[in-house]
Image (cartoon, rainbow, N blue to C red; front, top):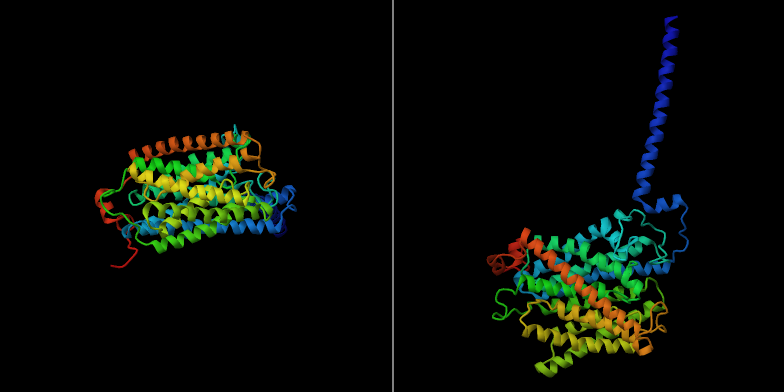
Length: 460
């Protein structure tokens, strides 16, 4: 009798155990499924039955390629361009600026930056936090931004723009900022300056609604970085020995290599902004190249006329000026207009740098003269040369019968410039009080390679 009762009792215990195990298994599978769906937006979209058949393979391949091209612009392109322009004792530190900013901005952009710039609009000023950590940013296209490519492809393309913008600013304070201060400044600047401006123009914000045109970043990238560079140069003051010692570039072949990589990558920067493999991308590709060539020759001619010699540095600087200036117009103007823009870019940027020297502004690597002046000129030129015949999604400029666009372009230029100047000044002031912006005199004389990183670019 006892044995039978024990058997029944054991069967009941086994039944309870199996029932408990079943419940635990169901709950565990549910938790794992939920975590997987949240961490993989593509699965979430599939579970919700969202469409994904509108993806165009050619457009997607082009945007991924363009994203890689813009990455090349940052590292090694900009890193080598800037690295060759500084003195031997600061070359590694200068290269490190671009490399570190790329890594830092990548993390910030994925975690919160993309959501702030392109998330659902809040009053035309900033995006919300709906897409923090890329939740909701999956493989299905976002019809608002790019209806033929995965949303994440658009996100990674825009990440590269966000990364190169603060990297451009570093040229203004080359050879004298603490590395720790640089990291804090770059991170805060992207979140509080770049993201709002990108939202205003491209993310459904007020400038875009007013009809401002910025094809690939004349205002968002070049004006914002140029204005910030001006503040940085003023806030940190000139390098020790500026105007007394000969602070010449240490390696022009390195700078020329960087120029070539920047030019190469700029095809992704501008033509990629068509967000598809289409005729607008072809137009932007050709106008980009034409403006760079025109800018290089324009700079060399004026330099030859006034300095009596044409220089490699002048030709490289002119090419970058042409590229920066045509950026906002590349997908809206004809090739002949792009040549005119490039010629004007070389002249304007050259004279801006001449004036910089007269005013004793130590913008070490000419960010203000090339990117700031170029960005402003390009935004205005878009208001003059833009044509609906080139891009039906744009507008006609002054030379095609519409004066309204020029006014909106000037408003965009002034708004971005003012916001970047004020915001940058506030950030630098706070960082200076908390940490200090500039290395000590001893560290500056030793060089940032050794004082900040304990490394040498060249053996002694």
